Amino acid sequence: MLRHCTMAELLDLRDGEGSAAARDHVDECAACRAELDRVHQRVAGLKALPGFSPPRDRWPVVREELRRSRRRGRWQRAGWGALAAAAALVLLVGVRGVGGAGPTVLAAQEVDELKAESRELEEVLQRVSREGRVMNGVTATVIIRLEDRIAVIDAGIAEIQTTDNSVTIELRDLWRQRVQLIDQLVITHVQQASYVGY
Amino acid sequence: MTEITLAAVDELAIQRAKSGDLTALEGLCRAYEGTVYTLARRVCRTAEDAEEVLQETFLEVCRSIKKFRGTAPGSLAAWIKKITASKALIRIRYEKYRETDELQEEGGWAGRRDGDVGLQLDLEAALGRLSETSKAVVWLHDVEGYTHEEIAELMGKTVSFSKSQLSRAHARLRKLLGEEVQC
Image (cartoon, rainbow over all chains, first blue to last red; front, side, top):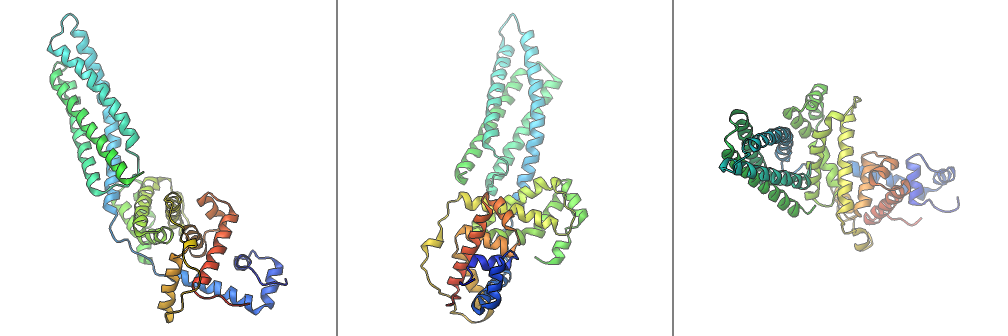
């Protein structure tokens, strides 16, 4: 080879992939040999650079996110059960109420509407609450609290449905609270997404 | 990252982590936080980005540890590093960072300090003046030991791209460190 090696050729040689011509040239050329030595020294220098330590402890945020995911999983499983039970109750109340539109029937109709609204909000929530999104501790805490409150509401709804099918006004109030809380949850997620900029 | 800390992540701890035990997951994350953060810092431009990558990596590790099947020594570290590299590369790809390579003034500026500390500082500074992509390739290939094929796959580019970036990075480092010689 009549010319000096390029950097690419030297790197190939270093990685054991160089051509025979390049290898022969380096054997004979002191300048290219010195350049190859400098590559080795540079890499040794890079490997010797000190490591970094994270300035803040990120585990608490990770742990909260993991707990939140687990809670959400449980909540979704419980939520579908509660929705099915609520649907059965509304159907039952509707059948009983045929012949007169008293306060119980009106409450049952509203529960129906609230259920639909709740379902729509949950669909929105699914879209905006992306798994693994990085969020600050304050937002994570707000979300956890909202989810906890929703879980309590769900428990109340399930209890009413299993003990007394006639308490539709109380059931309606719980569904109202549920819709409001999911609404807040959606807003919190949207605000977080806007802040993070994803 | 000390060997003692890494040794603490034994097979039993991994099994506990796979079962979702938060204490075991915490132990695992803490054992590798220095490794993950250092790699993230070397690839990302800012410390804040590296912190985000650290957090995203830990979340991914905790959620996917059940899928980890490695048994060979070092396979857990390699798996975690690959997650880190992937997340860091995604970040530099989409963050539209300013490519400093073309903007910095040419010419060597090193050699103003003496001894190993001076050399380290120069290398550190020179590394910081590479473009994000070049820096990522030189670090992944020369320090972490990734092959050009692996880097190409992680970056969604070709092997030639990885090789040319490495060559470019070394040429640039040589210039920045004032090592250029007349052949």
